Length: 223
Image (cartoon, rainbow, N blue to C red; front, side, top):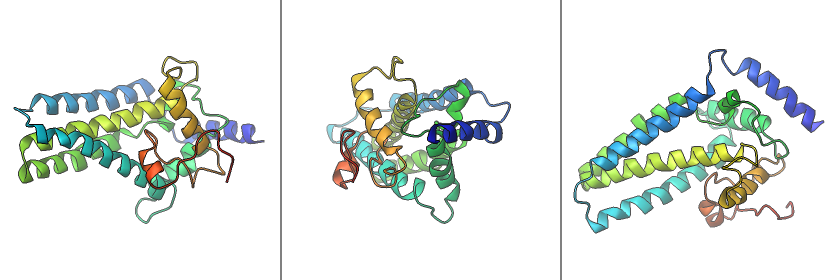
């Protein structure tokens, strides 16, 4: 019954949520092309980075891991006033399109159910990464702001590539990588409807899950 429900929902989603002119490859190229361009530009503007300024990179990555965790746990899995569309797209659509028993996309157009919409990529860069980077440049130094932007956008791209890898066939080039297999197992358990609202909210690396005790190994027994 669950297999049939997933198959039926996928057909409904493809019919009602994916525009006829949608091109998965264009979506993929826009996400990574624009993100890589921002990282390269920001890195290229660095000038005589001092040792202490390099600390911006690990601090930004840890901050991004926490933001990923909090956003996933408290916005994508709980309806929040004003952010209902995010909840609907993730819990109401993504988790119905992919269950723990049916994790693989079947067509390149299914990327619509995996990648963040292009408008959110633009919003993330223009409304978050750049403003925060400019603020840090004014408060500390230009290098700090540039390192923040480069690190934040690089983390976003890392999120997207890992999440995509989890929904590719397990025998794909990415799917066969050892680290990907282990992280994919954690994400697969998160897609179990009985577990998704309690465990494994980090999509990338389970740092915040370990801190907040919401980490569940792929071989653990259901609680």
